[in-house]
View 1 (cartoon, rainbow, N blue to C red):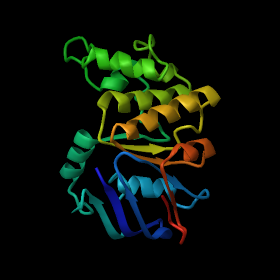
View 2: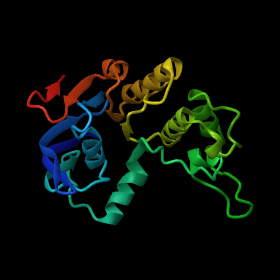
View 3: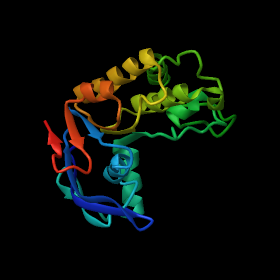
View 4: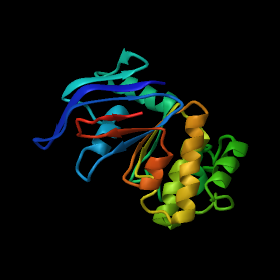
Length: 218
């Protein structure tokens, strides 16, 4: 799915964060949103994911203007098409690793449900296989980041929004996460990554400099 921001502006607490920002994120190419701290990388990512409204400009998905989507329409978009890997992880620490991946459980007994094969595959790909019954709250920061990625792999969404995915990872896990994200793009998904990690940036097929006149690379 093609995601576009057209001349968008956003102010938070009265302070301009984005001013006339435009970007196109095409399927099949991992796009890096880069810039100095405070440049608005995360804000732009949240706008593209319809998590944050824009003050001016438009957000388009496959050419359709979704800027003023209703709450129910945004929820359907998130449910049907997207996965998020954000800095706060979005992890439910009181639930098991498995539940955090599938987000499904039976009413009786609270047993985790969903596709067990896909669950095991997603945990194996992120190095968490065998830990599905542990409470997510017992995981380290880096492991929670990988758990959030496991959820995205399980969902196999059309669009993946990722914020600083390698920030708390060691070199081995960083390479693993970068390879997994690149694989999403190779399979025709739209992958948008806010990052300052040079290794992550080098793995992206296109770069957008947030808040710069020299906006597009590739």
